[in-house]
Amino acid sequence: MRKFSADYIYPVSSPPLEQGVVITDDDGIILAIEARERHDPASLQIYPGTLIPGFVNTHCHLELSHMKGMMDTGIGLLEFIKGVVTRRQALPETIEAAILQAEQDMVESGIVAVGDISNVADSFPVKSEGRLRYYTFVEVLDFLRHSGSEKAMNNALDVFHQVHPAPGSTASIVPHAPYTVSATLLDKIKSFNKPGGITVSVHNQETAAENEFFQSKTGDFLPFYAGFGNNLEEFEATGRNSIFYEMNGLHPQNRNLFVHNTFTTGEEIRAVQAWSPNVYWATCPNANLFIENRLPDYRIFLENNARVTLGTDSLASNWQLSILEEMKTIARYQSYVSFEMLLQWATLNGAQALGFDDTLGSLEPGKKPGILCLEGLEPGERLGMGARVRRVV
Ligand SMILES: [Zn+2]
Image 1 (cartoon, rainbow, N blue to C red):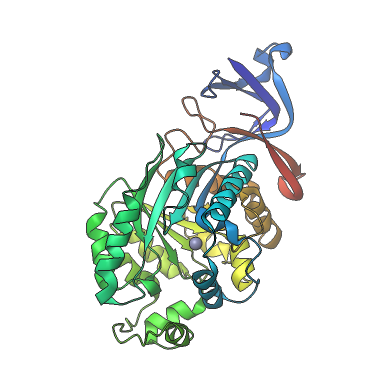
Image 2: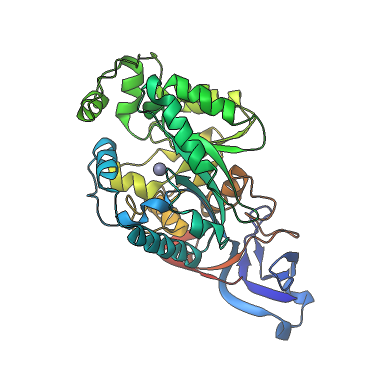
């Protein structure tokens, strides 16, 4: 048995506790959370700071880790995608070493689980080791060519069958984004993913051009596609914003994780949440600043009781893979989001979005969430820019 105490404990699933004690067994499974006065001080490991559960990173692309520092910032999403598509090739040993290092960075920054996008199988050997709990999202896209949907789906199935998840980890096949997946491919994905019990993630409304493209088939996506030799003859505007097209490929019974949402409106959040009670909204603030130099307006999400989760995106579009750094960015630019809310986004909401809340996301008896000590909470419970975490368990 081990007993950990600190100035404060934030279990996330229950109110914060001053000078509490978290009691675990030798494997890190929480047995109880109690007041400090019930315990002999000599039996406690006492930390200066705040004990919190391990972080859940709901959006990453481990297989792009070798692209760290390769892309310019502020170039906009379409230039960014072009760069990734044309520059991601590298030697297998370079890719593998970068994935290993990126995972190690995540472990050290207090992350315990990851929703990780895979187009190829490069990250699977590392993920199979089970150092972190992974939800692998095998991503499929046909660049809006119905005629290419079968080949795209077969490729995805081939990758999917190479996933050998460690115990507690799992996988699904997911659409990349509305602007890269034909209606035929959306149908195929929907019939592969049976309704109920799985998580499906999809990139959503990351750039303003996306809605314009679906509304009227105009804007920056036309030259983008022309650059790949695609004249978009198989695509027709829907007259509505892209998120409604995307929903055609999703089952409301599943956990659906919309990623980025920089241009999502309150009306759209309400419509999607009325369609399904299992909707989650992942935000990757540092990647949004890196690529497009803007952030979602989080007030819209708070006003609509949206279940927000945090993600780092890949090292191609971020300076590091750290959920704490994502929290700091929100605390810096939209400081009305309280520390408690940020912590819930960073832990329990993410665990629920991935279906990993059986063991992760909160300090509760029976869970093995990982325990972190956070130092640098300022008076008034503001997350200081110098805040840091260390792993306790
Ligand atoms: Zn992404």
